[in-house]
Image (cartoon, rainbow, N blue to C red; front, side):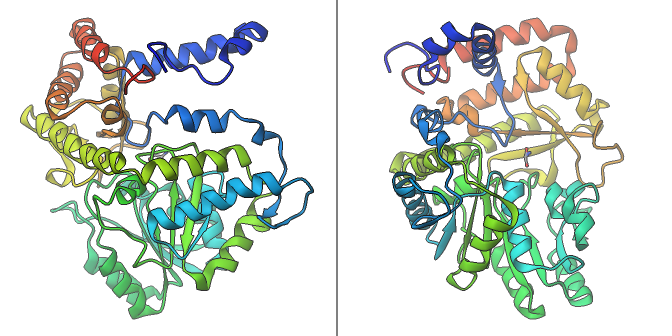
Length: 421
Ligand code: DSN
């Protein structure tokens, strides 16, 4: 790639033809490269993944599955989807993979459609305790179409209360139990969930959107041997394109495939399917396992640095790529902390903490994650510094410029989309 940043395929042409839109792309590249990206669900995908996404495969309609499409001319894109499916199965050791879901929410919608009827009971983690919108929030289809019983974390340990999960399962006899979270820093014990699901005769779905990259790298236990269905996104720690995917047992393969297409989606996005294939191959390389390991080491270094400066980590630390920070002792809301960090060139998101007295628009916490900074080549030493910068940005808003200068100095050495990253 030389020393030039990677702007995407044929960027020169776009710049000539549509300078106004090209400027948006350049500004976003500048934004991504010009600040510290600590949103736990984001990453810098590889140039090879970007190239596959920006390809002529976007032109092709391919409703159906390889070898059984409802359009002519699918023989070439069939090869892309077969590769993506084979690679996903190999990467995660799964019996079956569906790589067509457009997103994690679509993957969950399809999985529920395959396993439930409207009105059925499911047990899932409450959004305010770290779950996801599609795990039964009242403002989401899941909360409106199913009878959702929610579990959470204990007030004292801030860890999933497996006794509560079992009690609720015994009492409500759900048809489906969902485990997985978007703001839970600890490992989830899939064997315990499997045991509870077996005890009440429920399906077990693991939504590992946040941790699929860590599972692919083999650095945390996989949900695949335990869950009937595993849903995930491809763009977080996994470092692939925007999108979703589903893994399942052979027994459920036909049901899952029919639920994705034709039940909830029409034509798959073949350029994105191709990019998923690229990302799965990248994740099989030994370097990716090392990357996944460093993501966790970095998250722990960042969490320790923050804790050392009085920023308490929910549950006392992290086993994964993210930490949830309780700001109540600092008397700063999550929304205000997000604004103060932004002013210093640090991008992160406000997040409710368990038993948060504040609403979701304000919150008492922030969520930080290390997939991006690890892709940029930062290590524990840099993350210690990042912890100091985040703390100062939150505590001393008047020093945003000075902190921003230190952020820039750090990024001058660790920029994404340069020749090495
Ligand atoms: N929006 C994602 C996240 O940030 O965790 C989950 O869908």
